Length: 176
Image (cartoon, rainbow, N blue to C red; front, side, top):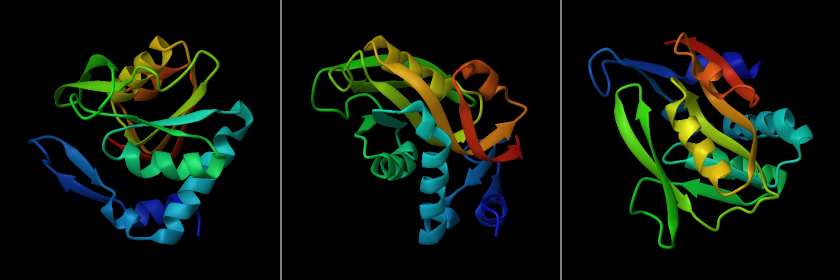
């Protein structure tokens, strides 16, 4: 079965969560399928191999699921991007907008060096706010963001347009 068909079969849409008007894409059924999780990591690795990444970064919380899987596939370190106050060493931070509010992300100041080539991984690309914030953190260290990977891309919210020309690899596109 094609990976898109498998994802379409597994991803649930939960209306009005976390607030009215949001169509939440629930990936917990995907997480319950180890073979599908393996295929996701392999697909991501294949899509970014030519960029020769030296690190994979993922924002809290669901980037922590898919990012380490890709990092292991590529033989690269995983860089956590977290909510404020969760990292024990000196951090850099950036505030950003979500489709339903605002947030702040942090990363260890010494997580990357100038020569690093980073892939950002998350479960979903919507408005692009989270990934834009992650790009800002990464590039603030002197490293380069060479690609992004998402399980789901929501069409109609222009997330892709906000991060191009950085390549966007998404496994399934769904209406917002």
